[in-house]
Image (cartoon, rainbow over all chains, first blue to last red; front, side, top):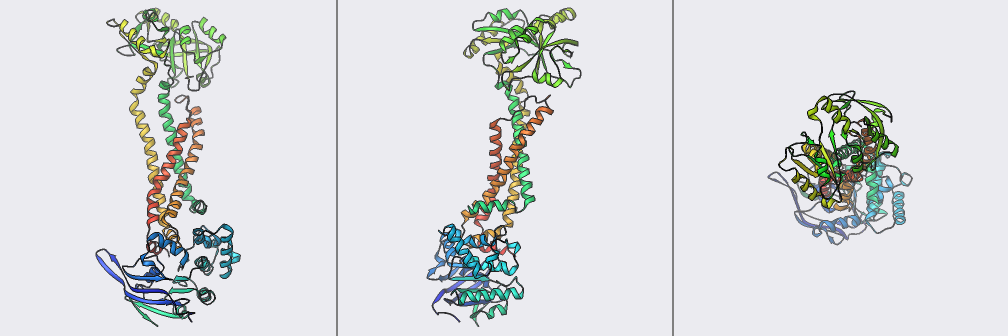
Length: 229
Length: 385
């Protein structure tokens, strides 16, 4: 269960629509909800329901038409592009469906990427990277390139990259969507561990009911409206 | 540091594509360098002309001769150190394709006016003493395997018949740019033959070479010479050697301009090709760029990555092109010596080759860089999977 009820995410009256030609397609309509610190929330819903859009906005990589998003006391909907980039670098970790590792960089170098934007020196960066690769159980694969790793291992490297700057909040967009059942289970266990052992707040978009079972709370999005399970 | 490492790794990501682009830039840079050198060489005769030598020719056209009797009057003009004369002979060796510059000259004064033709004292003396003697430049001698003492027969065109000469000396140029493919022989040999066979063509010269004390006197001397023969049967036109050369060069200036344009076009074409390659590369990596932005990297970082890769590929191509320029120029100089006896690529051209390559990198990187740096993260991430 959630470690605390203190909200880390506060969303108020969030709306978003896309323009396709002359047509305006509403995606999210006045959504408001909170996510408590240390909570593991799953967002579910049919394709096109707006769950990935909502996740992107929480992560600060997409903008809202209306409404407010406050993460850890920072109202990110008011931040400019540059401040938002800085905020993302330290405050949020991303886990993607297709891992999004840089193929020409080793596992170590991929995990090190977010640290290059910090003031840490080389030795400190190495310590951080080795520590998180140990957490995800890939310390012995740090010199491997993504193509030399299985899908599950690549996703674990991606998780290591997401947590290397020690953000409070992790967002995951279909993190098990490209994995076989065994690998998916490993990833879900790892995410569960991040919540329980490391106190991370995880927001995960998924289609997979088994993945959603790991969450403390499942929220359904349908036609831009939110409901709670 | 990271950006450099990333750029280097990306360079070898699609090896075939990178290699082809590098080779494309190299070939373009090579072509640019060789064409620019060719144009430069065309003008080099004029650039290396002496500023203390004037050429006096018939005012109507170079094809009309001047009487030899003008010589002493020209020598008497204040400011003139010495004067010599010559005729374009226009003969070839054995076959018409073996064509080179050959002149009938007055040896003593001519060699005095052209100190850049260096002969040993013995060879010079032998040449002066032998009326059927000739001297040739080192490159010309090397082309036909001529040695001092050889009997050489030229086939005349302007002055028909077989003309026999004894090679009395092989000169070498004082500087690398000095023309070493010239054949010089005694004007008296030509003139005496003309007296016997076509008397009306005797005692005539194609041009006078006039030495002046210093370059500042050249305009006054030229004016004085031309004034002296004003309203005569053969009026003269006196100009500096450089202007004389330029009058030849200007006849083919349109061709040279066309060649120069082609050299620029080659660079422009490779720019478009490289830009297409870079655009394709950036398009393929949009997802990666979006991921990096998601992690907190900014547009400037991505611009550095994309632009750096574009410039690195073009610079590699430029270096390869410059490296290939040397053997290519050597090959032209040896295998096409008849047309390009002296084909040295100048350091300035090499520098321009590198700058051309860099400009290819810069221009071809602009659009992909802008595209990659300004991509919306959400849009970029949609491209993955």
